[in-house]
Image (cartoon, rainbow, N blue to C red; front, side, top):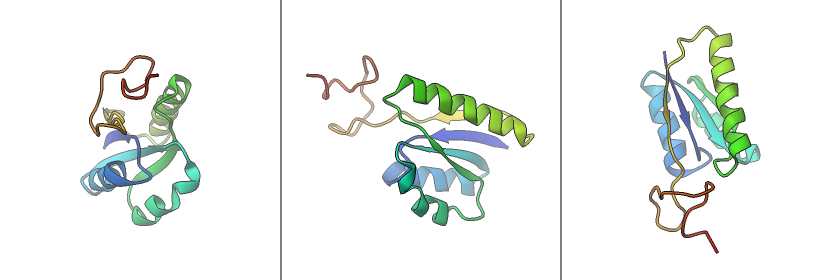
Length: 110
C-alpha cells in the first residue's frame, strides 16, 4: 500500500486530499496542528485508511516527529513503506507555496 503524509487536513484542500487519497488506495497520515479539530475528518474517513497525527509545518521538531511517527507506524502494521508525498503548506496570504526561510512565508516576515 502506498503511503501519503498530508498536511493541513483539518479543513479545505488538505481535508479533501486526505479523503481522495484514502479512497484511491493510499494509507494516509493526516497532519494537523490542532487535534481538537480532528473529528470531522475522522467521521468522513470512517472505514478508510486515514490516521490523524499532530503535525505543525511551522515547527521543525513537529515535522521530524511526524515523519518518525509515520515511518514507525507504517512498519508496525507491516505496510510496505513508500511515503509518496508530503504536501507543503500553502501560504495563507497568496494561497500558493512560497519559498521560505525558517519555515515562514515571505509574506509573514516582519
